[in-house]
Amino acid sequence: MYVCVCHAVTERQIHHAVKHGAKTVKHLKESLGVGSECGKCVSCAKACLKAAHEEQHPSLVKSMIQLSPVQLGAV
Image 1 (cartoon, rainbow, N blue to C red):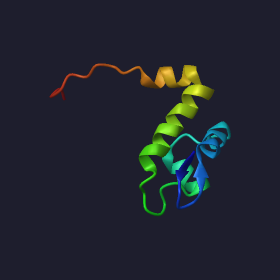
Image 2 (cartoon, rainbow, N blue to C red; image 1 turned 180 degrees about the vertical axis):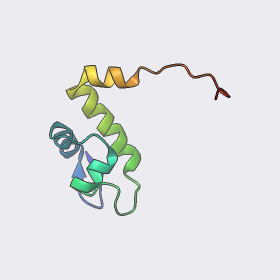
Image 3 (tube, rainbow, N blue to C red; image 1 turned 30 degrees about the horizontal axis):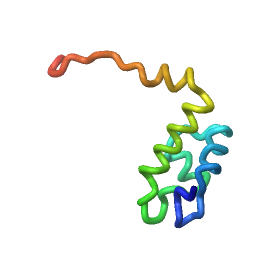
Image 4 (cartoon, one colour; image 1 turned 60 degrees about the vertical axis):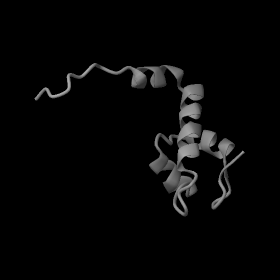
């Protein structure tokens, strides 16, 4: 599936970029041009990036998702 039509970037290319170290949409922008033209692809690119990380690094994603409760208004 094409994720970024402006730069003809596919979901497969995003998975490949993750395999080679891409961790953020900024990395995808630098390496593939994702989101650097019209920006309409950014939300889909984020979803593909997340899916690629979940598939390739499940334990890392799980540890990143664990959140600590924060009391609002605490200084």
